[in-house]
Image 1 (tube, rainbow, N blue to C red):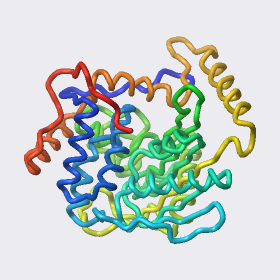
Image 2: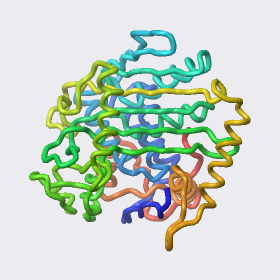
Image 3: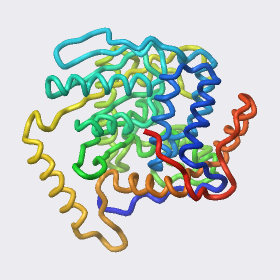
Length: 373
Protein backbone atom coordinates (compact mmCIF):
# COMPACT_ATOMS: atom_id res chain seq x y z
CA UNK A 1 0.00 0.00 0.00
CA UNK A 2 1.71 3.15 -1.18
CA UNK A 3 -0.21 5.92 0.49
CA UNK A 4 -0.91 7.30 3.90
CA UNK A 5 -3.41 5.19 5.83
CA UNK A 6 -6.96 6.43 5.68
CA UNK A 7 -7.40 9.12 8.28
CA UNK A 8 -9.51 7.88 11.11
CA UNK A 9 -12.74 9.77 11.64
CA UNK A 10 -12.31 11.80 14.82
CA UNK A 11 -14.53 10.36 17.49
CA UNK A 12 -15.48 12.83 20.19
CA UNK A 13 -16.66 11.45 23.48
CA UNK A 14 -15.44 8.80 25.81
CA UNK A 15 -12.81 6.07 25.79
CA UNK A 16 -12.67 2.69 27.45
CA UNK A 17 -9.75 0.54 28.48
CA UNK A 18 -9.48 -2.68 26.51
CA UNK A 19 -9.92 -5.05 29.43
CA UNK A 20 -12.88 -3.09 30.85
CA UNK A 21 -14.49 -2.92 27.43
CA UNK A 22 -14.16 -6.65 26.80
CA UNK A 23 -15.48 -7.51 30.25
CA UNK A 24 -18.49 -5.23 29.78
CA UNK A 25 -19.37 -6.75 26.41
CA UNK A 26 -19.05 -10.27 27.76
CA UNK A 27 -21.23 -9.49 30.77
CA UNK A 28 -23.91 -7.90 28.59
CA UNK A 29 -24.03 -10.83 26.17
CA UNK A 30 -24.26 -13.31 29.05
CA UNK A 31 -27.08 -11.27 30.58
CA UNK A 32 -28.82 -11.30 27.18
CA UNK A 33 -28.82 -15.12 27.27
CA UNK A 34 -25.75 -16.05 25.24
CA UNK A 35 -23.89 -19.16 26.33
CA UNK A 36 -20.20 -18.83 27.23
CA UNK A 37 -18.81 -19.97 23.83
CA UNK A 38 -21.07 -17.48 22.01
CA UNK A 39 -20.20 -14.58 24.29
CA UNK A 40 -16.47 -15.36 24.18
CA UNK A 41 -16.39 -15.60 20.37
CA UNK A 42 -18.48 -12.47 19.82
CA UNK A 43 -16.31 -10.43 22.20
CA UNK A 44 -13.09 -11.82 20.73
CA UNK A 45 -14.20 -10.72 17.25
CA UNK A 46 -15.51 -7.31 18.34
CA UNK A 47 -12.36 -6.58 20.31
CA UNK A 48 -10.24 -7.48 17.28
CA UNK A 49 -12.06 -4.72 15.41
CA UNK A 50 -11.90 -2.21 18.24
CA UNK A 51 -8.23 -2.88 19.02
CA UNK A 52 -7.10 -2.54 15.42
CA UNK A 53 -9.13 0.60 14.69
CA UNK A 54 -11.79 -1.15 12.59
CA UNK A 55 -14.47 0.56 14.66
CA UNK A 56 -17.25 -0.18 12.18
CA UNK A 57 -16.87 -3.87 13.14
CA UNK A 58 -15.91 -3.41 16.77
CA UNK A 59 -17.87 -2.99 19.98
CA UNK A 60 -20.43 -0.72 18.34
CA UNK A 61 -22.01 -4.01 17.21
CA UNK A 62 -22.84 -5.02 20.79
CA UNK A 63 -26.27 -3.35 20.81
CA UNK A 64 -27.20 -5.09 17.57
CA UNK A 65 -26.03 -8.44 18.87
CA UNK A 66 -28.20 -8.08 21.97
CA UNK A 67 -31.17 -7.25 19.75
CA UNK A 68 -30.78 -10.34 17.56
CA UNK A 69 -30.00 -12.69 20.46
CA UNK A 70 -33.04 -11.60 22.46
CA UNK A 71 -35.27 -11.25 19.41
CA UNK A 72 -34.79 -14.82 18.21
CA UNK A 73 -32.84 -14.20 15.00
CA UNK A 74 -29.63 -15.63 16.51
CA UNK A 75 -29.62 -18.81 18.55
CA UNK A 76 -27.95 -17.94 21.89
CA UNK A 77 -27.05 -21.59 22.62
CA UNK A 78 -26.39 -23.23 19.27
CA UNK A 79 -25.29 -26.79 18.52
CA UNK A 80 -22.45 -25.97 16.11
CA UNK A 81 -21.30 -29.12 14.32
CA UNK A 82 -19.55 -30.53 11.28
CA UNK A 83 -22.14 -32.08 8.95
CA UNK A 84 -20.08 -33.02 5.88
CA UNK A 85 -16.45 -34.01 5.25
CA UNK A 86 -14.38 -34.88 2.19
CA UNK A 87 -10.60 -35.09 2.50
CA UNK A 88 -9.31 -31.70 3.63
CA UNK A 89 -12.76 -30.13 3.27
CA UNK A 90 -15.67 -29.85 5.68
CA UNK A 91 -19.04 -28.15 6.07
CA UNK A 92 -20.05 -26.67 9.41
CA UNK A 93 -23.65 -26.00 10.42
CA UNK A 94 -23.83 -22.99 12.74
CA UNK A 95 -27.37 -23.79 13.95
CA UNK A 96 -28.28 -20.12 13.41
CA UNK A 97 -25.79 -19.13 16.08
CA UNK A 98 -23.52 -16.12 16.22
CA UNK A 99 -21.35 -15.72 13.12
CA UNK A 100 -18.15 -15.25 15.12
CA UNK A 101 -18.66 -18.53 17.00
CA UNK A 102 -19.17 -20.38 13.72
CA UNK A 103 -16.19 -18.70 12.03
CA UNK A 104 -13.74 -19.37 14.86
CA UNK A 105 -14.87 -23.00 15.14
CA UNK A 106 -14.61 -23.41 11.37
CA UNK A 107 -11.11 -21.95 11.33
CA UNK A 108 -10.07 -24.23 14.19
CA UNK A 109 -11.22 -27.18 12.08
CA UNK A 110 -9.46 -25.80 8.98
CA UNK A 111 -6.20 -25.43 10.91
CA UNK A 112 -6.52 -28.98 12.26
CA UNK A 113 -7.02 -30.25 8.71
CA UNK A 114 -4.04 -28.21 7.54
CA UNK A 115 -1.84 -29.68 10.25
CA UNK A 116 -2.74 -33.13 8.97
CA UNK A 117 -3.00 -32.56 5.22
CA UNK A 118 -1.25 -29.25 4.53
CA UNK A 119 -4.48 -27.38 3.83
CA UNK A 120 -7.99 -27.30 5.22
CA UNK A 121 -11.15 -25.49 4.14
CA UNK A 122 -14.56 -25.24 5.81
CA UNK A 123 -17.83 -23.95 4.38
CA UNK A 124 -20.21 -22.47 6.98
CA UNK A 125 -23.98 -22.68 6.69
CA UNK A 126 -26.88 -21.32 8.75
CA UNK A 127 -24.74 -18.56 10.23
CA UNK A 128 -25.35 -14.91 11.09
CA UNK A 129 -23.45 -11.61 11.03
CA UNK A 130 -19.78 -12.39 10.39
CA UNK A 131 -18.10 -9.41 12.06
CA UNK A 132 -14.48 -8.53 11.14
CA UNK A 133 -13.27 -11.10 8.61
CA UNK A 134 -9.64 -10.41 9.52
CA UNK A 135 -10.19 -11.79 13.02
CA UNK A 136 -10.63 -15.31 11.66
CA UNK A 137 -7.74 -15.06 9.21
CA UNK A 138 -5.50 -13.91 12.06
CA UNK A 139 -6.62 -16.90 14.13
CA UNK A 140 -5.01 -19.13 11.47
CA UNK A 141 -1.86 -17.01 11.21
CA UNK A 142 -1.36 -17.21 14.97
CA UNK A 143 -1.10 -20.99 14.53
CA UNK A 144 1.43 -20.77 11.69
CA UNK A 145 -1.00 -21.03 8.76
CA UNK A 146 -2.00 -18.63 6.03
CA UNK A 147 -5.66 -17.88 6.72
CA UNK A 148 -8.40 -16.83 4.30
CA UNK A 149 -11.96 -15.84 5.17
CA UNK A 150 -14.95 -14.89 3.00
CA UNK A 151 -18.59 -14.14 3.68
CA UNK A 152 -21.57 -12.54 1.97
CA UNK A 153 -24.27 -10.38 3.49
CA UNK A 154 -27.55 -8.71 2.60
CA UNK A 155 -27.35 -6.65 -0.56
CA UNK A 156 -26.24 -3.06 -0.07
CA UNK A 157 -23.69 -2.56 -2.86
CA UNK A 158 -24.57 -1.63 -6.42
CA UNK A 159 -22.85 -3.26 -9.35
CA UNK A 160 -20.46 -1.27 -11.52
CA UNK A 161 -22.74 1.18 -13.36
CA UNK A 162 -25.67 -0.39 -11.49
CA UNK A 163 -28.46 1.51 -9.75
CA UNK A 164 -29.77 -1.08 -7.29
CA UNK A 165 -28.42 -3.00 -4.31
CA UNK A 166 -27.00 -6.32 -5.47
CA UNK A 167 -24.01 -7.73 -3.55
CA UNK A 168 -23.34 -7.44 0.12
CA UNK A 169 -20.12 -5.81 1.28
CA UNK A 170 -18.73 -9.38 0.89
CA UNK A 171 -15.38 -9.08 2.68
CA UNK A 172 -12.20 -10.93 1.83
CA UNK A 173 -9.48 -11.35 4.46
CA UNK A 174 -6.05 -12.95 4.39
CA UNK A 175 -3.46 -13.19 7.16
CA UNK A 176 0.08 -14.52 6.73
CA UNK A 177 2.38 -15.44 9.64
CA UNK A 178 5.58 -13.40 9.93
CA UNK A 179 8.41 -14.76 12.08
CA UNK A 180 9.14 -12.40 14.94
CA UNK A 181 6.33 -10.02 14.00
CA UNK A 182 2.61 -9.63 13.59
CA UNK A 183 0.82 -11.14 10.62
CA UNK A 184 0.62 -9.52 7.21
CA UNK A 185 -3.07 -8.71 7.26
CA UNK A 186 -5.39 -7.82 4.40
CA UNK A 187 -8.99 -7.28 5.50
CA UNK A 188 -11.13 -5.57 2.90
CA UNK A 189 -14.72 -5.11 1.96
CA UNK A 190 -15.36 -5.47 -1.76
CA UNK A 191 -17.43 -2.31 -1.48
CA UNK A 192 -15.69 1.05 -1.45
CA UNK A 193 -16.35 1.25 2.32
CA UNK A 194 -18.14 -1.12 4.75
CA UNK A 195 -21.84 -0.54 5.46
CA UNK A 196 -21.12 0.04 9.14
CA UNK A 197 -18.96 3.02 8.11
CA UNK A 198 -22.17 4.73 7.00
CA UNK A 199 -23.73 4.01 10.38
CA UNK A 200 -20.62 5.31 12.16
CA UNK A 201 -20.57 8.52 10.10
CA UNK A 202 -24.25 9.09 10.80
CA UNK A 203 -23.47 8.89 14.51
CA UNK A 204 -20.54 11.29 14.13
CA UNK A 205 -22.42 13.58 11.69
CA UNK A 206 -19.39 13.30 9.41
CA UNK A 207 -19.42 13.39 5.59
CA UNK A 208 -18.52 10.31 3.60
CA UNK A 209 -15.52 10.27 1.27
CA UNK A 210 -16.39 11.06 -2.36
CA UNK A 211 -17.47 8.26 -4.66
CA UNK A 212 -18.13 5.59 -2.05
CA UNK A 213 -21.91 5.72 -1.65
CA UNK A 214 -24.99 6.39 -3.75
CA UNK A 215 -28.44 7.82 -3.26
CA UNK A 216 -31.56 5.85 -4.21
CA UNK A 217 -31.16 6.64 -7.92
CA UNK A 218 -27.54 5.47 -8.02
CA UNK A 219 -26.02 8.95 -8.04
CA UNK A 220 -23.04 9.63 -5.76
CA UNK A 221 -23.61 11.23 -2.37
CA UNK A 222 -21.34 12.21 0.53
CA UNK A 223 -24.28 12.57 2.93
CA UNK A 224 -24.49 9.48 5.13
CA UNK A 225 -28.18 10.18 5.76
CA UNK A 226 -28.92 10.00 1.99
CA UNK A 227 -26.77 6.97 1.29
CA UNK A 228 -29.00 4.13 0.10
CA UNK A 229 -26.28 1.89 -1.31
CA UNK A 230 -22.52 1.57 -1.48
CA UNK A 231 -20.32 1.75 -4.54
CA UNK A 232 -18.16 -1.25 -5.44
CA UNK A 233 -14.45 -0.97 -4.72
CA UNK A 234 -12.51 0.74 -7.48
CA UNK A 235 -14.26 3.99 -8.35
CA UNK A 236 -14.13 4.31 -12.14
CA UNK A 237 -12.80 0.75 -12.22
CA UNK A 238 -15.56 -0.59 -9.97
CA UNK A 239 -16.01 -3.67 -12.13
CA UNK A 240 -12.99 -5.04 -10.26
CA UNK A 241 -14.68 -4.61 -6.89
CA UNK A 242 -17.91 -6.08 -8.24
CA UNK A 243 -15.96 -9.07 -9.56
CA UNK A 244 -14.28 -9.62 -6.19
CA UNK A 245 -17.71 -9.41 -4.52
CA UNK A 246 -18.87 -12.15 -6.84
CA UNK A 247 -15.87 -14.27 -5.84
CA UNK A 248 -16.80 -13.91 -2.17
CA UNK A 249 -20.43 -14.70 -3.05
CA UNK A 250 -19.48 -17.97 -4.74
CA UNK A 251 -17.22 -19.14 -1.91
CA UNK A 252 -19.52 -18.13 0.94
CA UNK A 253 -23.06 -18.66 -0.40
CA UNK A 254 -22.82 -21.23 -3.18
CA UNK A 255 -20.32 -23.59 -1.54
CA UNK A 256 -22.36 -23.56 1.67
CA UNK A 257 -25.76 -23.83 -0.05
CA UNK A 258 -26.93 -20.60 1.55
CA UNK A 259 -28.75 -17.52 0.31
CA UNK A 260 -27.44 -15.03 -2.22
CA UNK A 261 -26.97 -11.47 -1.02
CA UNK A 262 -30.16 -10.36 -2.80
CA UNK A 263 -32.09 -13.07 -0.89
CA UNK A 264 -30.86 -12.28 2.64
CA UNK A 265 -33.08 -10.31 5.02
CA UNK A 266 -31.62 -6.90 5.96
CA UNK A 267 -29.26 -6.79 8.92
CA UNK A 268 -31.11 -3.77 10.30
CA UNK A 269 -34.51 -5.42 10.48
CA UNK A 270 -37.38 -4.82 11.01
CA UNK A 271 -37.59 -8.60 11.49
CA UNK A 272 -35.21 -9.62 14.26
CA UNK A 273 -36.86 -12.98 14.94
CA UNK A 274 -36.21 -14.93 11.73
CA UNK A 275 -32.74 -16.43 11.10
CA UNK A 276 -31.09 -14.98 8.01
CA UNK A 277 -29.27 -18.06 6.70
CA UNK A 278 -25.85 -16.59 5.97
CA UNK A 279 -22.95 -18.53 4.51
CA UNK A 280 -19.21 -18.12 4.93
CA UNK A 281 -15.96 -19.87 4.07
CA UNK A 282 -12.55 -20.16 5.73
CA UNK A 283 -9.30 -21.76 4.63
CA UNK A 284 -5.98 -22.52 6.35
CA UNK A 285 -2.78 -23.38 4.49
CA UNK A 286 0.55 -24.53 5.94
CA UNK A 287 3.36 -22.76 4.07
CA UNK A 288 5.79 -25.52 5.01
CA UNK A 289 3.66 -28.00 3.09
CA UNK A 290 4.86 -26.31 -0.11
CA UNK A 291 8.27 -24.89 0.75
CA UNK A 292 10.72 -25.15 3.64
CA UNK A 293 9.55 -23.01 6.56
CA UNK A 294 12.84 -21.10 6.69
CA UNK A 295 12.67 -20.34 2.97
CA UNK A 296 9.13 -19.03 3.25
CA UNK A 297 9.86 -16.84 6.26
CA UNK A 298 13.04 -15.50 4.65
CA UNK A 299 10.94 -14.61 1.63
CA UNK A 300 8.37 -12.80 3.79
CA UNK A 301 11.16 -10.88 5.54
CA UNK A 302 12.76 -9.84 2.25
CA UNK A 303 9.40 -8.92 0.77
CA UNK A 304 8.33 -6.75 3.71
CA UNK A 305 11.75 -5.11 4.06
CA UNK A 306 11.78 -4.21 0.37
CA UNK A 307 8.19 -2.97 0.49
CA UNK A 308 8.68 -0.73 3.50
CA UNK A 309 11.96 0.69 2.16
CA UNK A 310 10.55 1.45 -1.27
CA UNK A 311 10.34 5.14 -2.29
CA UNK A 312 7.10 6.93 -1.47
CA UNK A 313 5.34 9.74 -3.29
CA UNK A 314 5.45 13.22 -1.70
CA UNK A 315 3.62 13.45 1.63
CA UNK A 316 2.95 9.72 1.77
CA UNK A 317 4.48 6.70 3.43
CA UNK A 318 4.63 3.10 2.27
CA UNK A 319 2.87 0.55 4.45
CA UNK A 320 2.34 -3.18 4.24
CA UNK A 321 -1.21 -4.47 4.75
CA UNK A 322 -1.83 -4.52 8.49
CA UNK A 323 0.85 -1.97 9.44
CA UNK A 324 -1.66 0.78 10.18
CA UNK A 325 -3.93 -1.57 12.13
CA UNK A 326 -1.18 -3.07 14.31
CA UNK A 327 0.19 0.41 15.09
CA UNK A 328 -3.30 1.51 16.09
CA UNK A 329 -3.61 -1.57 18.31
CA UNK A 330 -0.47 -0.51 20.17
CA UNK A 331 -1.85 3.00 20.67
CA UNK A 332 -5.17 1.73 21.96
CA UNK A 333 -3.57 -0.60 24.48
CA UNK A 334 -2.19 2.57 26.09
CA UNK A 335 -4.88 5.15 25.28
CA UNK A 336 -8.01 3.04 25.30
CA UNK A 337 -10.68 2.64 22.63
CA UNK A 338 -12.60 5.74 21.46
CA UNK A 339 -16.37 5.35 21.49
CA UNK A 340 -18.63 7.27 19.13
CA UNK A 341 -21.71 9.01 20.60
CA UNK A 342 -24.20 6.38 19.39
CA UNK A 343 -22.15 3.60 20.98
CA UNK A 344 -21.87 5.52 24.25
CA UNK A 345 -25.65 5.97 24.30
CA UNK A 346 -26.19 2.27 23.52
CA UNK A 347 -23.79 1.22 26.27
CA UNK A 348 -25.62 3.43 28.76
CA UNK A 349 -28.93 1.78 27.82
CA UNK A 350 -27.45 -1.71 28.06
CA UNK A 351 -25.77 -0.92 31.38
CA UNK A 352 -29.08 0.25 32.83
CA UNK A 353 -31.04 -2.66 31.34
CA UNK A 354 -28.76 -5.35 32.75
CA UNK A 355 -27.49 -3.51 35.87
CA UNK A 356 -23.86 -3.62 34.71
CA UNK A 357 -21.40 -0.77 35.22
CA UNK A 358 -20.48 0.90 31.90
CA UNK A 359 -16.81 0.63 30.87
CA UNK A 360 -15.97 4.16 29.79
CA UNK A 361 -14.46 7.18 31.46
CA UNK A 362 -14.24 10.87 30.58
CA UNK A 363 -10.44 10.75 30.46
CA UNK A 364 -7.95 8.70 28.51
CA UNK A 365 -6.97 5.57 30.45
CA UNK A 366 -3.34 5.57 31.54
CA UNK A 367 -3.31 1.83 31.79
CA UNK A 368 -5.77 0.11 29.48
CA UNK A 369 -4.91 -3.33 30.77
CA UNK A 370 -4.01 -6.48 28.90
CA UNK A 371 -5.31 -7.29 25.43
CA UNK A 372 -7.98 -9.92 25.08
CA UNK A 373 -6.83 -12.95 23.06
